Length: 460
Image 1 (spheres, rainbow, N blue to C red):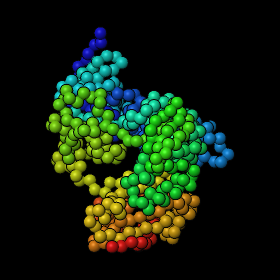
Image 2: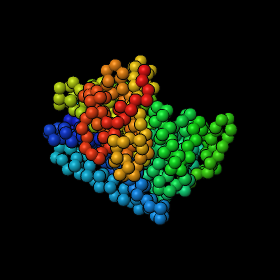
Image 3: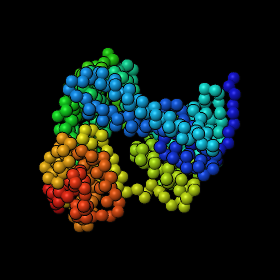
Image 4: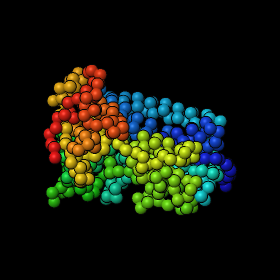
């Protein structure tokens, strides 16, 4: 028989992700009694520092440093070890920063609601019940493995989390899904030395992007030796290591040493027993929230991936600002305040986007002009030649009547930084001409804006 301990808190935070930890730390420093619950001691700090942004981008960096004479398996194993050391340090730092605070208690164990104000936590030492005046749900999301014959049963099937923890470099990696996650991992593992095939059910990869940008991205990927198969519908995994797919009405097979399921993520709510809290969820399993991230229970909020919003760490951070504004501020901030939220696919070079694509802008009824240039042709961007990365292209979608920037796609060296400049310009209402005529340091990648915005290739 296990013992049950009882705790009372001003705020209970379920999940140690970005939004949850920022909210917990802020409230704890203000003297609130905070209990932060995390189900795994390997996830202090959340997805980003442990199995997401930090390790994957560290692998992107290390994969690009491999020289032709470096033995792929040895280089990969060394790289994974170095990355794991980074994530371990970040994880420990996150734990100590909060658990060391006098007003904050971190509990490790699986949490589930027993009523709208009480959460039960199953720990190795027994069951703990925590009563919270306010409760923040920050449990994130989890990879989805499609229900295809043999896929879940195959010992070779992996999620992105599984893959970054293995120290064995697969000779043949098959990636199911040509979205951001699939392409990023395809790029990483090809650069480490794996033979990589991407199977995408849609007619092309990166279906959210315009055709011209997607075509440049595909050219870069195939140029690195990645095989991309669009219009491929995976049917089954046969005999553990044979991927069977259909394309153009014909059956094809691939032999794999590892299979990455990169078909999306879903909110991690299954274990929470939300019905006992009376918290509503969407058909997709996300916690249903309003623009202030409040659930139908006024004292319960949901932050980050679990609320069904964009699955980015920086959105979870902004979620914490909205919730904190409700709890200790003026209560005015809302998700509807967000404009020009950028995102980046960390292939090599990275693809960063913000705002509307050309297709979306036309569908919305805008009259537009398009500024577009291959990076190799941008005279004002010598940095690309300096760092020996001239692949890619830049594209701006501009309102013909107001000269406002509606969107941009930057596939280039430093794109993950450049997109933040464009997003800031959009949020501040800066015109495309004003951005084009700005003064930038030299040589820098931002100088490209001096040329690209004026390189109009289409105009309504």
